[in-house]
Length: 106
Image (cartoon, rainbow, N blue to C red; front, side, top):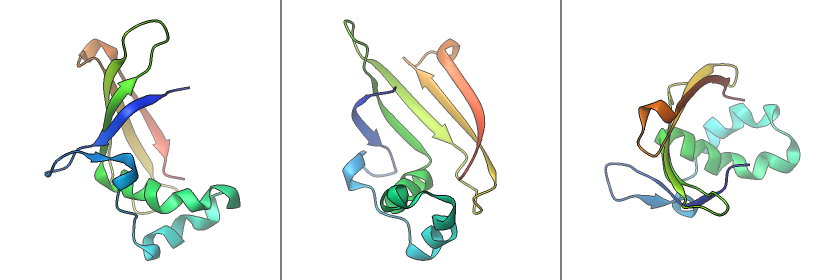
């Protein structure tokens, strides 16, 4: 499980805290609603707002050691729940500690 401390979302403005992410418009969220369990739907507007930002920075908590900074990026051009997205996570600003995967938006 990944635990993040002080995760932020960078934009052209100053970094925003996760709890300050602007929710996605209801028209866009409505397209994705049928794909999500009812108990998780309340998170969808903010999750999609984060998705539209395109990246997240934070620290990976390591028990008994220093936290490791990370940056996660994703394609963000998808408009359909079934579209594939390329996601990349890089730890400690080290290209050798990068991981990339393709995931569906739903």
